[in-house]
Length: 258
Image 1 (cartoon, rainbow, N blue to C red):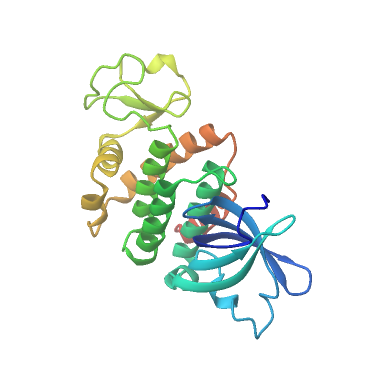
Image 2 (image 1 turned 90 degrees about the vertical axis):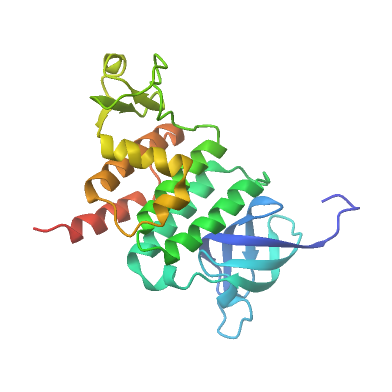
């Protein structure tokens, strides 16, 4: 720390991850508005009388006072801005929130300020907590996050020949990052078929998400296919599978009719 740097600072943050440490401390991964992603320590937060405990739960958006430390900065005060209570009482919403937190953590670098992704994360957690179809809120989040990270999928024109995509046998190439028209599908044999309904859903979420998220129902087939293609594309970009995907898939398997 530079001698001229104030020892104490304030920031707004979302708690992405927590790890118990020692007898009463917790190491947190937080994403802040004006300092980016940080690993910090909240000392004594697990004590029953700690004034900070309820303000540093997973997914909570809080105003923090921090002190610079030798290895990690220290949370000295915390006050909740939004607790998103439904994210802890509803199993599905909770796991979607875990997935959102995973992607924010994966697509951001330590101490790299990104107010656009911060605003997106805040908006998405609120949507996941409140909307009737939280999975659509997550699809809108994935598309906007990919755009902000420089990986916007191409959905209106063929990723290979650039011709406008028609209502025909199209495929989505996770490797190339967009739709292949019927004339170019041989370019990527691994590309999966994408139906008209799911392609339309992804396009509308990419260009006019508010209108889509206001809907009370969208066909399961279109939602599941859109999810599958975006997930493959994200895993291709990250070269890894988000940790929370396995839990989401188990939940779907348990809910599926036998």
